[in-house]
Amino acid sequence: MPKKKKFKVEDGESLEGCLARMREEGYQPVRRMERPVFIEKDGRRIVDHQEIVFEGKKIEE
Image 1: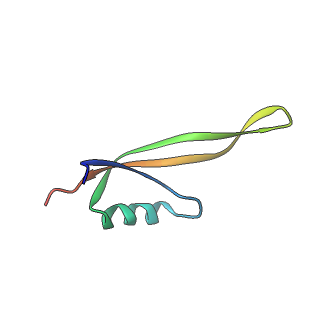
Image 2: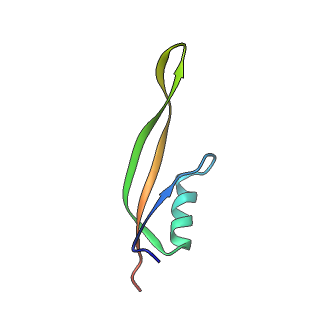
């Protein structure tokens, strides 16, 4: 398994759900990244939502 892995918070998933999924796979969060997702509406770009991605590091046992 890789030492680092990125976990995206999926649509309809809570932050806690994503963190639990990380723990199940044996990773702990070390970094949280957010970026806006834009859509075009009436010829203008507007923010639709924020995409949240956690970077996980393999838990050493």
